[in-house]
Length: 219
Image (tube, rainbow, N blue to C red):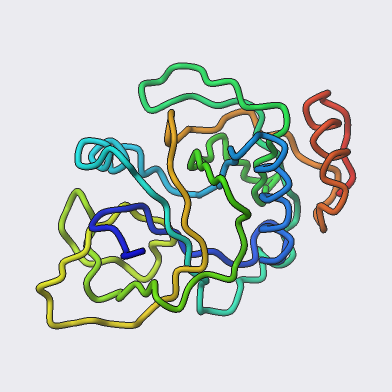
């Protein structure tokens, strides 16, 4: 399947003390529990760009590629991890997160963030990191959808379009996973609940249950 002209592109890596394989395994559990629906947490506010994407296509997609750089220390061993428990849509309406979903991020007790974000994803089939050798993203041809500018090195997640006329193909990235974006497409997250200590979220069902009950969670 060819790479779409415009899409959400996100590069993934170790995050909130969880390895890539652990993150994908947990998201697959979430996808199964929610009959195809899962949430992919991101750190930047791309709401206006998502709105523009929805004006340009009726079938928005998110494509995932691995980050090439070495994980940062705070991603590998964060001081704390929080689960996000409330959400609102692009229009500011409250959105009820499914009780089988869990969106986490690193958390700093000394300088706590009060907002995070997530893509609302759907896949009928298993999500994994296997990808396809036929789906390649050329960094040099990607442009930010709203501004038309090239992507910055620090843009882990961006809404982009492909400028196929450019002569600068740039670095090639494999598409490791590809999913649909479904209503409400993108949510702003609120009310983080710090988890007892960071680590591997192996007991997903128990963590989800205790998080939504408001009980302390050891992970």
